[in-house]
Image 1 (cartoon, helix red, strand yellow):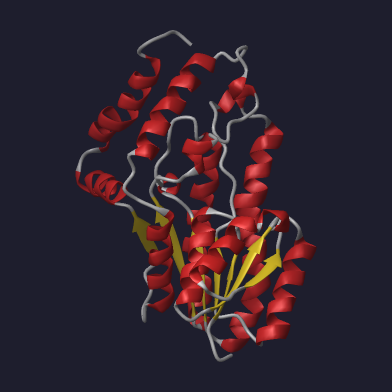
Image 2 (cartoon, rainbow, N blue to C red):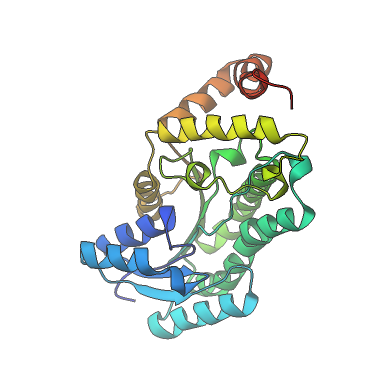
Length: 288
């Protein structure tokens, strides 16, 4: 391999797209993947505008055949895989009681089991090479629960545990595991389409009014966020190039401040200042 080969999942927009372009600009041989190739227009446009070359493959993280086909293509064309960036994922918002079982399962199939299956597919190739990097994009929601995000946060908490365990298993093979933990992003889909559970949008829901207020609060936080997808892409680049990569890379000044406070401030104070304040803002103007 003349260039370091990296597979990135979920590159149709956001973090995945920015990471694919940035790594291609900086000399990696990039295999950008997405579940639905009909959503490639935005990536194609950025590739042309920034005059870079990358390879685009179909890869649905919930379909084993799709995963195997994509990995086999990369190996056939490149001879090996230096890095995997697990980025593909689903958002889902809504009070837990309004989230249907099938909606929750879809989130876990994509965010957790999908990530595990892609990782499972690349590990034998990295073991044989006795080197590799596996980066998984989780979220600060994998370290702290959030209002209307019970299922989403649960999936990200699961990924944190998976990566912490995996790093202990594969480090002896020369494979490094890193967790990328972005804060809420300015261009985040939490603010643009809310990714709401179906019942959460129904006026018949017991939580309907509160959920409307929660959406307004999240929109305000996202619009004012100083953190972008490009910031996350740069953190991924640092992790890929670090001689001794860290297990965790938190991205975003607000998130870093909050978790620094949680390290030194008693938990009860954090709960009153953060959790209880979120509840108050959502419920202060009306009954559910």
